Image: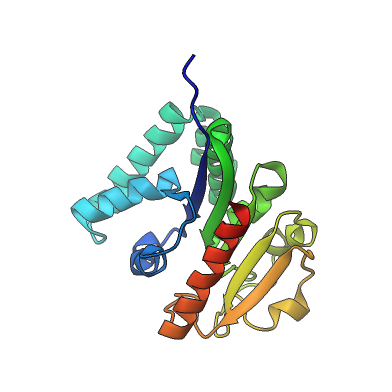
Length: 228
């Protein structure tokens, strides 16, 4: 019998506007001390990255037809989530719920080969993983810009209600100038004792200065070391 050793993964869950964050990921992951962790991107993000590298980000054919088509193939054929895909396509579930189910299936499918899982989540990716974490084998979550509220909407419970019940450690780096929630979030929302919020001088696009970049990378490395 061939034994396969389990691996430690740093799973990156991005936001939908992935092209805006490619430089951020380069900054954070370049020379990061991974302490034995292997970086993996959410497969939906990997598909988008592949299209971005080959065809750019402005191609209407890619963004509106080819990318959704290949994402659908992945969900239906690789993850065997035809019913979830049809519910999403017919408007029975939201795009957030659809992505949440896809991510959950992906983590569950890889659980047997995973010894430790830390999730580095960006914006909407933070919302997805925080909704799932209590039910999955997730060791730690690091969020870059949690979307506590939409700038043009009143508070929405699906963004914040579950945060009071989170059982997994979550470190949130939140921008002081973030329209999706600034310094006021620690006073306005009920947060689990497992959640720690650290503020950096950015808006939601997360363009870090060198001092904050060094600080964020250092904290990510501490989480990976702790989870080793």
